[in-house]
Length: 239
Image 1 (cartoon, rainbow, N blue to C red):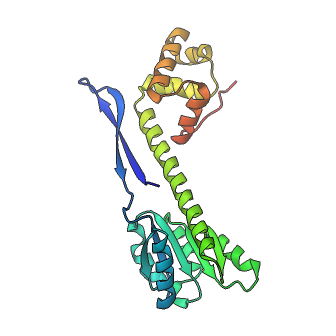
Image 2: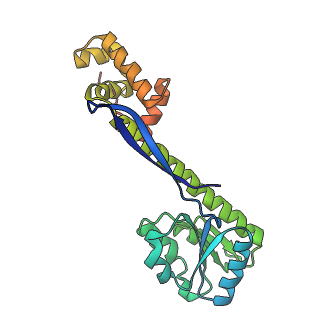
């Protein structure tokens, strides 16, 4: 799996008009593997987790306390946090809560001794953890939980990538094209949009074709998807 961050920008002609959308891709993949941040106040158990995770191909960063993690959390590369809660220094359920409060998008897996009490796991999930493993657990359980957590990061990155591209594409539209787009999204026909904008239906059709071309869509449902991804508010056309 590779982590790619895309950046999009408008390419203009000599008159300053936007011709097309360009972009660059930055490969964020670590050659050593994806990163797991282990928070555990017990040095021996931290070492055990490091060996397990490195053996599975992950890069591992260790933190002896939750506070040590919080100090650098905003600048950490995408990865997953594993918190062993049996040590007080690990911060327990405060880790997912605090990361969420600081808007740090790192999924957290909590490891702890539930002693058969399912409510412990429920509390962890309510605190913001993506998974809870009760001790004792098997290596396979932890690795499966990590794979699922990192998969969710990948999906979020894809959504962010699509939203950024959609926003740039829509920004490339002219003022009139944007008005036609808003009319289409509101459910208007060529005729009603033409009447509202005081232009001919044929002109609306020409703008519509140009919008489809610029946004790389072939149907109205695809157009709606692009608009939603870009965060546009879709208003219903008034009677």
